[in-house]
Image (cartoon, rainbow, N blue to C red):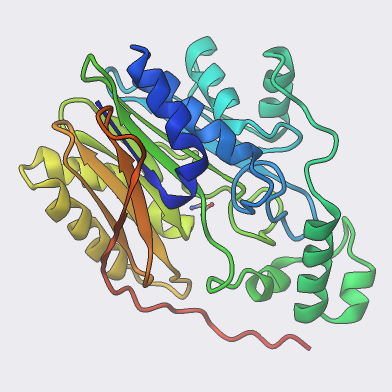
Length: 317
Ligand code: GLY
């Protein structure tokens, strides 16, 4: 039994480990580990009180995958429900579908009686959003921001890859050897409304297969979607690579991407035997892991793989 997570999973890993110690499933452990991160007001990348989209609305993405049979559930661009991972779990457990988006995800969350909160942003986060827009956009655009505002140039300015990226990743193996991966995020700060990242896309930000291992990503989700990163790591393991080599190979795939918008990327990966690794294209990043014999988690540095950023200059005014 083991759990690995991105370092912002510290607030949830003890709950997750308790589930495994009590004989619970990897699925229950991952959901239990992610919910405290989603409720953490100080984490502005996951769940409650996260950075909103460019219109000031919080839209959440999440997914969960069962490595035993590859069943999966996900929600995207969902408003009003802070525990996106639990709604994703309901999608997996209750529906013949994998991914619900927008109004449909919200309707289903209500049907499942998921916790719905009226206020998901504190005044401090709203003030930061306003300041961010004022710093990046002409005053007349900010003052008249509405349904008719053309946003396409402004999201290129405001979505600065150096400022805003996180997301939470959890991967667990339970006493039966079943693996589960889970991811939850508010996505890129100040994103275009309806933008969906890699977190709810099975194969991009999340993948688990008991026979080989699992992987989950944080960072610039558009890159993981293009390179199918989480699945690539598992596929490389299937082809015989160690978890460390597979993860590094998938990072090199990301470095090889063309196009203008290249930002920071990170991943955590676990093989079926409990060997783990984590990669980053940023310096100083860590991840955490815990096994049942440990009193608490251990924090480890990630392996650095250089992915030079590219972001075209845009004229603001
Ligand atoms: N990796 C999270 C996102 O890009 O939305």
